[in-house]
Length: 128
Length: 135
Image 1 (cartoon, rainbow over the protein chains, first blue to last red):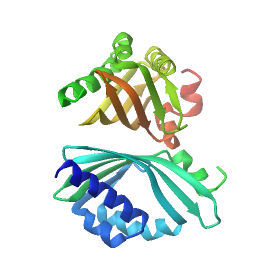
Image 2: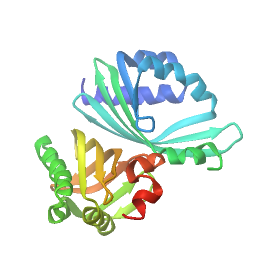
Image 3: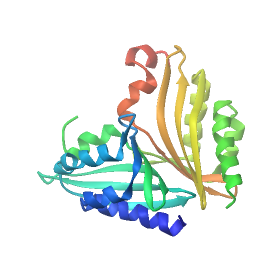
Image 4: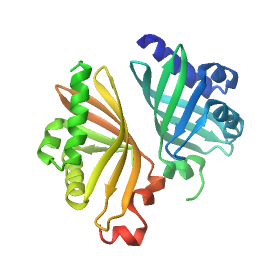
């Protein structure tokens, strides 16, 4: 994949995630895709990640993946971004996230996600 | 600074120097204008302040090891994912998964972003009484 193709795939992935297009996300994940989250410390399959999305989406009225800074490398990308969310009660929160993605043949084969779970309460508008 | 090999060498030199408590080499890896951002406070730490933090860690901790390093270089920088293992004075071994994104200039790190989970801070620092009072 060229740098341009990797960058386009990265943006397509985050646009689909933002707009809750789960069908498109299923096309973007390679069949053997692995998703790892630092806050859980374990790997899940792409299918497991997609299955968890409806419940995850239900938590907020809106999410936007902003301030995207993307760099590509051979076979993947690193993206730093701000996830803004609006809860159902109108509370607005933000999380600062970095993802390293690996790609093959136009699809994502691995995602490693880094964020700070101590920010979850503020993100959701809950008292810690 | 565009060659992958130079970026890889800088990355290894920086983290190896921290492991070896070679503060002089660590210092040379940072450009004069270097700043380091952390995901727990979303603030940029100055070069001097960050170097002091690193120096304190080198002096206080028995051992610092960056394991499972996965490095990718890109135009003007690199990203390293690693697990940092630290041995505290009370022999508690803490660990933390970190993603370090560095932007470089003339063979030095000019800006860096560190992402990690302080929600798991006890896994890194140890139980509150056991390690922090002795640290």
